[in-house]
Image 1: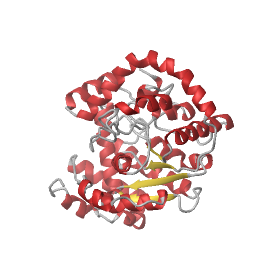
Image 2: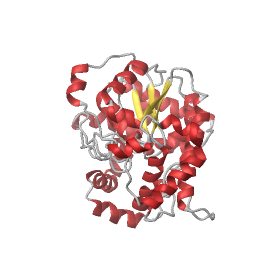
Image 3: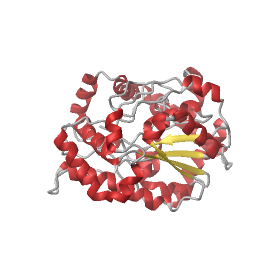
Image 4: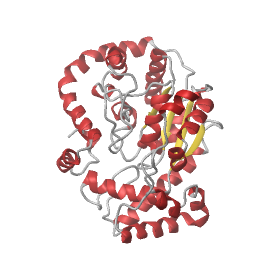
Length: 360
C-alpha cells in the first residue's frame, strides 16, 4: 500500500467491505485506485509540462481559495459537493487524483472530457462517484503536509510554503476562477494555511458533536474493521486504557478546541461557521450567503430554487442505545452545558424526531 494509506490498519478487509457495501462511491474509489496503475506512465510524461507551467505562471492571484473545514463526519463533504456544483469555482477532481505528479496539467488537458459538474450528492466517507466529482486532494496536499492523514504539521519550511503558493497561483491563473477544497486534515492547520494564503477563506461545518461521535464510531467499524482502531483527524487507537467511546468523544472535542484556537488567527471576514443541520434544511440560503460573502456575487435564485432541494438531516440513532447514551454523557461532560447549547439549532430530541421525516 502507498504510504498515504498508512493510517488504514486493515486495507484488505477494507477492500472487502467496500466491495460488499454496494455503494457506488465506494466502487468509484476502487476504480480510481486501479486506474492509477495504468496512467502512471502518462503522469510521468506530463510531469515536465507541469514544472514548466508552474515556472511560467508565477504571477500572484487575488482570487479566493475557499477551505471547507470541520470534524470528519460533520457534513464537510456534503457542503463541499454543493458549493463545487453551484458556485463559479474550480476544485480538485477525481480525474486529477490520477495524476499526482501533474494535477494542474492533467486538469487542463482533460477537462473537456468531463461532464461538467455532474456527480452524485452521496459519498462514501469523503469519496464521491464520478470523474468530475470533487476530490479531497491528498495527491496534492501530501507534497507539503506529509502523508499522515490524521495530523497536519503546524509549521512548514519557507521553501515548502513558497511552492504551495506557486502551485495555487498557477492553478488560479490557469482557470481564472476561485478555488474550493475540502480536506479534513486541513482542519488541523487552519492557522498555517491562513498565514500562507492572503486570500484564504474558511467555512467551518458544525454538527451536533453527539452525532459526529456516533458517525466516527461507525466509520471505525466500516473502515478499520474495529471500533478499537482510530479513524479520522486527531484519532487514537483504544490502547491506552480508555475505551473507544472515550477516545472518540475526546477526538471530537480536540478538533473543536483546535479550530477555536486557529480561528483567532484568521483575518476578520474570512471565516464563516455553518450549521450542518441548518444547511440541510436551508441549502439555497446558505449557498447564496457564501457566494455573496466570499465571491461578492449573486447566483441565479430561480436556478437554485429549481435544482437545489433540502437534504435529509441524518441525525438519528444508528447504534445500540447503550453506546449512544455513553456518547451523549461523555460529550456533555467534555463540552459542558453552555458550550453544547451552541449546537442546539437542532437539539437532540428534535434531531431524533427528524429521523422519521421522509427523504426530501
